[in-house]
Length: 208
View: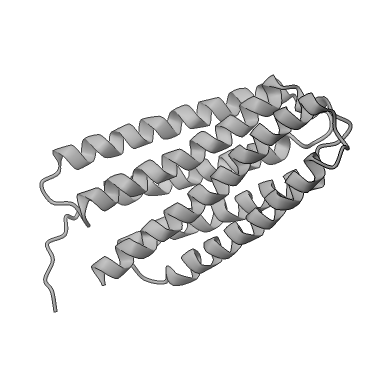
């Protein structure tokens, strides 16, 4: 049985939890973009604000790593997890900005598959936010990473069906180019959530 020196400072877990809560806010804002009559510019600006807050959390986490003599688990894993959570937020913010800048919300209706991917992202965000506080005990996390990986597969299926629709001739060429960039960011966000879950699995295995 290995003995470990663990700091009583809970700030590392608080940083992860705050970052994950921002991801829930981000997916909620993306869901708002599909609502009729929504102020797209305002929603996009709010996403930028949340992304900036996530950047600030990440910088605070890095500063904490550098100033701490003892960390709750490997510094490299703390750094990687914080960086990956920030990556997810970057993709979510990019989706909102592109939808607004490209004027895609002015289409008669956004594709059903796009809504399906956003729904998957929202489920992944909520799972992640629920899981982060449990890092402190390293318990009851397996269901989280298994479900997050399953959802990533679901998102991949919706992404492939979205590509089929885009290249079916339903949209003009310029709209296809714009929409393809948006759905690529959505798919990247799904992948980024999976990377977070895989990193949590790695941490738990190493610390068990």
